Image (cartoon, rainbow, N blue to C red):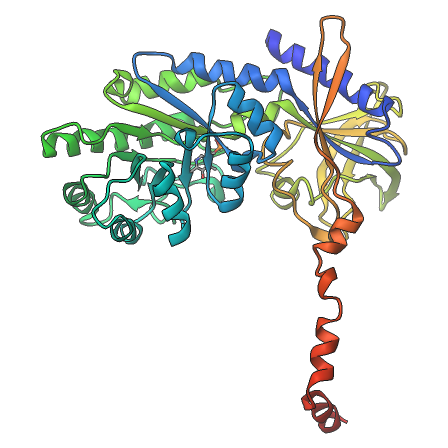
Amino acid sequence: MTSGSALQRERAREAALARAVEEGLLGPGSPLVGLLDVDGVLAAVDALHEAFEGPATVQHTFAAKACGLVPVLRLLREAGMGCEVASPGELEQALAAGFTPDRLVFDSPAKTVEELEFALEHGIAINLDNFQELERVDRLLAGREPSGPVGLRVNPQVGAGAIGAMSTATATSKFGVALRDPGAVDAVIDAFTRHPWLNRLHAHVGSQGCPLPLIARGVSVAYELAERINDRLGHARITGLDIGGGLPVNFDSENDRPTYADYVAELREAAPGLFDGRYVLVTEFGRSLLAKSGTIGSLVEYTKSAGGRRIAVTHAGAQVATRTVFMPDAWPLRVGVFDAAGRPKEGPLQVVDIAGPCCFAGDLTATARELPAVAPGDVVALYDTGAYYFSSHFSYNSLPRPAVYGYRTDAAGQVRLATIREAQSVREVVEESGLSHAEALVALCADGTERGARVEVAG
Ligand SMILES: *Cc1c(COP(=O)(O)O)cnc(C)c1O
């Protein structure tokens, strides 16, 4: 069954695609575009807040890597979210969006001294990944108190989900302190004993492909450990539990499944004490907040057939749908076909592959799909691409980053669009390709005599 909000989202998406075509934002002059349903995003934020409502104080942060576009972060800030960042770029994006340090969480497995100093100085919450980092922070503090919460990331080692690369709680994951390794729990307890400024535990069990009971089990391991540490220290040292993100998204229908409420029900069962108010809870959802609200629209440039295989050549390929192209079974996308006016196409279905513009044979965003006949000038839409697809661009073939627009529809079905990001220009592509150093290598060769000598030898 499709819920009311899913239906609304579907209608708004159709209206927005038609409007983008009408305004020429998607068409021969700009054959690739990202569209984001602003009401859909806000509805997801509401659903998240509602699901976690309870005695416990909860700070919901958005994982910036899922979409680091500043206007999107700004919208989320206005909607009451915090922001989880994991690189200097994400940190600056979040600050530019107006997040104050107290609403930021800094996670990264490779934080530099400089990054740690900045976070400690500004009161940004940090989650330390390992004991070396812990000792580094201890040296940086040199007896001072950090001005924000400091947590330790643990790996509950509860196992993998369906996608290995998305599973962060396997026995050998690169993240956090692996709790089931010999002596690890004692070492964590010892760290909390020696460092009074350590006051949080962090566990992010995985992303897409991890079933809810697996994620809940991982969170409950962190919860039990916090209880044990507080018990051992004789006071409530650990005041916050950061339970990460990772709610999977349903890529095969319009429905939001599972919901945040499903996840909270699972958490309550796995760790009933988690919500009783003794711990501040921090969440770091990314994909589940945005995925269903995003669409990639592309012009169909050509249609052809090869060896009996029908192919539609579009402008959306590995540069915007990197994971889908390289791991098509793990990251399938729903596809819609629209005519040159942006209206949904109908008619008898044909089996077709949807290809991108990149110069390698595997650049396909969908294979063997039954779709209404696709023709040049049509628009192909890739659904559920609001998270990761807009911000994790791959610059294969020096293809530029597409423009992204946000949209809302009023009660009369009228669409309003706002620019989130302009398309990257070809000039910008050339500039970031070392344009200002164009002469560098020729000059290097002209400077010395070595090259001449080598050429002589070779000759
Ligand atoms: C990627 C990541 C998230 C967000 O995961 P989603 O699956 O997008 O919800 C949260 N926390 C950490 C530490 C991450 O690496």
